[in-house]
Length: 292
Image (tube, rainbow, N blue to C red; front, side, top):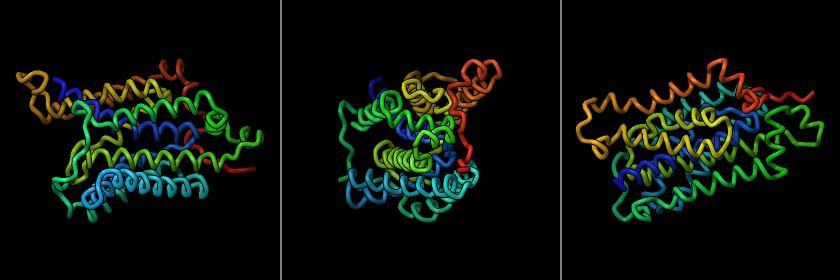
């Protein structure tokens, strides 16, 4: 039973790192639907790096690649005022094509000498992910920087009048969000899978994106959501570790995380729910800032 729990927590780690980066993006008013693409790029860069130089350089390179494409998204959506959804979708489509061309030639497991350390079968990255969530929560809730980030996401015009550098703040959050998505992808390919296969994220980025809305843009609720979806994802992959007699075929079970995501999105999209929790959503989310 513990191996199943450990694997579930590692899936939760992937979701948590990627989603907390997207939450930071959105708190500053920038939406990045290209999170799946950022994870793909980080996964490819991390896997190729790990094959030669080991895990720590792989995580660093994954973060750098994710941060670079986060910067590209910031330039397009913040400076050039490109529609944020279009910019994010462009990054996602580019990542799918480029990674297929670039990384699929490396298909297979990592070299034998590249092994992730374990603490009772659990990667230490899980604890690092918890620290990241606590840090983001603390910054957003308890610091002057967090107040600036939230003000930029709520009303960038008022924030600018108050002396907040809106463009700079959005750049900062978008790049950090990209770095975290890249780190999540590198962890996926090098530690959770330990191998490369075609487009290994399999929709995890989209689930991470949905978790931000599910969490009502609150880091601690996001933590609970990531743990829940980590369990659902791992159960869909290996249900026999819980109960060997489950009658549903494996392809149906593998739809469970996405069915759960759809159900959550339908619930939070209802008018009654939106009226009750409307203040949770950053008011300027997705809106370009055009300085008057």
